[in-house]
Image (cartoon, rainbow, N blue to C red; front, side, top):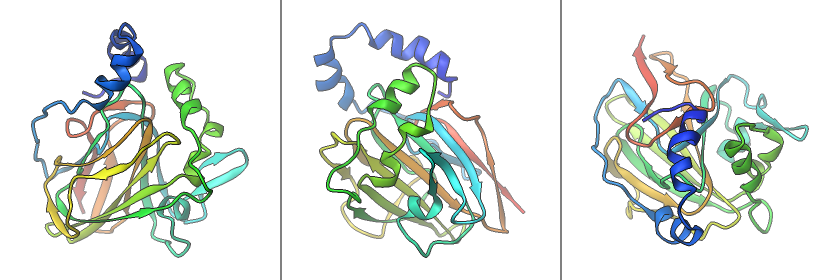
Length: 239
């Protein structure tokens, strides 16, 4: 369940440091623990286990979500779409080596997805940010991968809300594959259903376009460690 970064490092990660590196990388990393599929239509749940890096409402698509070495990471960068201009709430969750890497659906809907190649010939590493998290000192200048790395663009349309939101899965330098579990486009996926796996360090951004019918209320401060399918991220308030 949701913990402060300090509590997560002092409990979950501290226990894992006793395991041999081989066991961590070959067995533990690929775990897929059984979890109860909670259904609560008043919330969007976390799509990933990991640390919340940022939560920001962006009204201008050119407004920075974070500034990385003097260069803005914008909503257009997140969406890989120079035409995207819908004011949105963006939440970034970083999955470390110690996190479960199975991703889940925050709110039930119809899923379609599209892989997007890296901007450069290879992905940039995420190791520097992982070290930041383990040292409890997150530095945006170590987030260069956000501007460059390959990703999976997931679009989910919720018929019950008549609303579309997005999940952007971002791969690390050492990622072998972003592996969707849902093989057919436009398939229905239930809330907190497993839908994909990203190997090794990686990130998921949840993008909620603002809608006058709804208010999105964040549930945790930045740097909170959350778990997919167990922790709520957003309370959905009907206006």
